[in-house]
Length: 204
Image 1 (tube, rainbow, N blue to C red):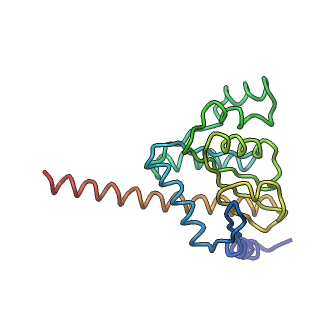
Image 2 (spheres, one colour; image 1 turned 30 degrees about the vertical axis):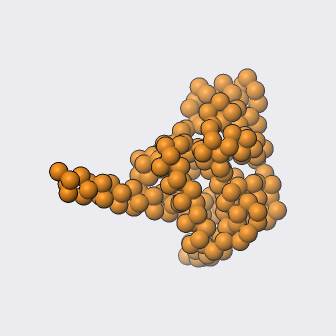
């Protein structure tokens, strides 16, 4: 059993070993990769498009958390795929494999972005969601772990992969990565609002 300090050291090690690639498989450095995601989401914000988050289990908790944070702090139009009535309706009337894709089929439009979170990278409902977003003309960002050759890892415009076989560690790193992006977006949002306020004052 790992000592508490060893667990933290392992999390830190994994943060430094996150692999970020494009859909074509090109390897990106950490700063370039995170910057690319920030640019993708900021462009979505400027065009007043929507960002959707999806995941199962612990990843669903991360998805719901980020749906709120990216809206409140990032100024982005997020849309929850976890409303109880819709979630249970789609699962019951179709299948759980369609629980996200069917909602996206009704809601997603060109220019929207899906952030797909799957520790294993094998969740069929996440695979279906990414394909549906693609068909709608939107983009996808994936966060996975476990096997290097998992199904979802190469499906996004940008793909973040955590090389670890344990749910807790993969989910912890996913949460930290998404929180960092949210904080960067919040800073950009604050700067933009400050510039707008300054321009208004100068023109008054």
